[in-house]
Figure 1 (cartoon, rainbow, N blue to C red):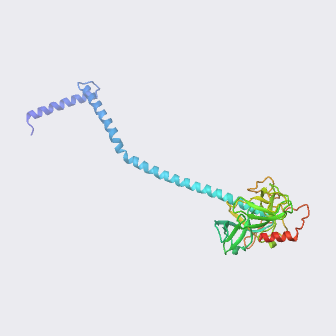
Figure 2 (figure 1 turned 90 degrees about the vertical axis):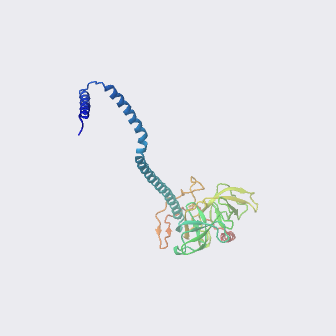
Figure 3 (figure 1 turned 120 degrees about the horizontal axis):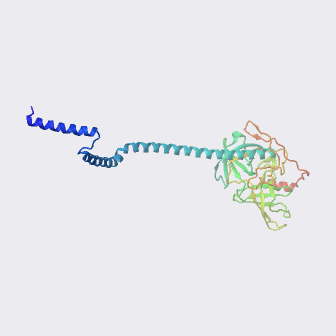
Length: 340
């Protein structure tokens, strides 16, 4: 039990506390109002300082969770960006392949070449040849050695060897290559030789007095049975002629129409046309020599698919107004020998 003195002190303290409480509830300004204000300001400052110090620590958990979400979002966006880039690249490649195939079918249609489309899958030297490529068609598709290979721009080369599913093609720019060629619009024929350079060929006319000038185009003269070279295929354009008329060593430098360093879709001629298409397959004057896609004749009709996936062109070639003179037997023999 509490003694009397203690009870008196407690009673006095309770009365004082109640008095202060009544004054505070009534809004009055008691003797301790200023003290309360000072204490409130001091405690408020301490609370603000504590919040500034403690809030970064208490916010670490929230920041870590947000940063993790941001990392996941960034990774997702990077993956979507990579997918879109791959799609754009594939779309551009598909468009380029479609354009190359369309140009090839135009050439085949105008020249009435029966072809087997193929794609270049490798570039490498083979046997004693430097400029060769491998295509994804072979004996199973009806391909044989010494068949002509072309694309939508012009002559590419001839088949060197075959397997069941692939074939090796010697390009016309190979130093060992020789093709019987004719100057378009004339009856001047000669031997076209590779130089080992992708952008240059050499042409020597069988007639040293032949009038050959820069800007003239060359087409294949054709071999017996169309092998190794079918007739009328565009080859290239004369850019320079060295020597003067009458010199036996007079050589014309030819820029090939086809860019052999950027091959994709090509066609193998499995059956040449019955008639020489002459100059009808050449690009129109408005087309550039490096990429002739506009032909002098209308677009061909759709091609028929054979058992060997051959594309048979159906458009008729343009007819020459003048009758085609027949080359001399000596010139034809020289050309065939050079072509083979």
